[in-house]
Image 1 (cartoon, helix red, strand yellow):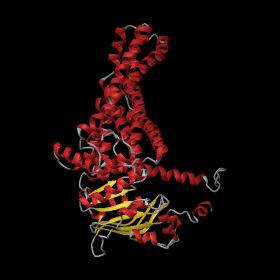
Image 2 (image 1 turned 120 degrees about the horizontal axis):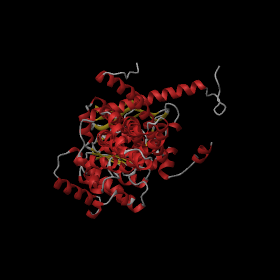
Image 3 (image 1 turned 90 degrees about the vertical axis):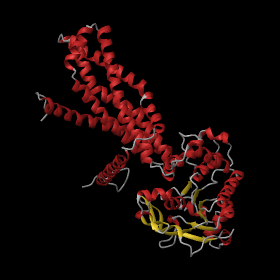
Image 4 (image 1 turned 120 degrees about the vertical axis):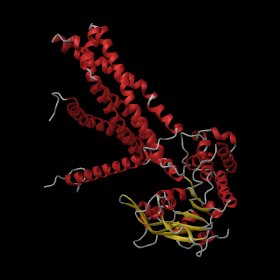
Length: 278
Length: 270
């Protein structure tokens, strides 16, 4: 028996499921082809005159938002974990809790989320506007491959700079956590760094940076793809910018889960030890 | 204006039984069209009849759903990516809104094609840009302006200078006078004629402006919207000279060239 929706007579739940399935398959196919086109061009480094302004926009212009994000993550982690640790008389170990959480999870994920909003939406809106105003066609007509000219520099800027920005977010977050812990909550600075040093391994830092490499690539590919397939008019551009953020955010969460499992398994393979999910 | 086209001359560009659909929406149906060397072909027709799509097909900026596009009697699908790129450099395209790159100034816009496709030295690029800006009646002081600082007419002229920078053999003009005042429209018409007189260029012009048709056309082709055609009816409802277009008894052509609504309002309301 099919459930008929009251608003649209004749359209059943099966029609909707079918439509969404076709749309999803089409979107995945389109994104795959887009990645294939990008893979064919990404080895050709763009001219500095094209690349530098984009790197400036992605990197330097994102610094304020990244520093504020990192600082407050660190400070909030200190405030939230202090009470629990104090009950167990472990408050001196607060540095390890803050810094492990920061470098492995919250730093990369929240920095990437903020950048998906700032950089991803801007990329989708810019390329979308170029699509709507026929500037993408003009590139093609003037003998420039639009993927090579528009997508490759944005991909490289995100791929190189989002990990760098994540490292900065981690660093400022550590400072924020240290400041609240020592100056406000009265934890000894010596123990803060001693336990941080004991618990935060180089592998934790590297795994966070590796995650952010994937996050950067995902943000760039999704944002450029939405821009290239933007609908007509101002509504189309607005929708492309929103979709770029929403899809990037989902991709960040899914990648974080998959990479989290992979990183734990990789640690076990490389160094042995008890950590295993399977 | 005498026609330079001849059925004996091989077509420079050709569409063979081309159909285009966007999703469920059909725009062109089994359309065949030839463009001959040196002629100025003007495509006219109501909004949404597929003129711009036809031009983009001819320029290789769109691919048909069915049918073939031929450049110099060779199907575009049989050309390598490199051949397509090389041939496309011989085609200049003036887009409807100019499509100037917002992030670049006028100089960089005009120099874009040269920088991307040639190894021309900077001083030569400068000379070419200067020449092309002069050709379209723009002062050298405009070279460092951003597209956002230009008027509609100036944007169109910069776009024309950019399209001409690589000395194309075929020029596409997509609604070159739309949105311009009558004087600036005439300036653009004059530039189309001057471009043709300066170098042997084949031109394809898409327009609603019958003044442009009168002034520049060797041959006029009128397309009709697919939605308003009967099944099996050809989409080209007129092909001939500009004078013949004005004398055509077909009410669809007559109403368009004289700008008369006829029964259209009733049709729209029905």
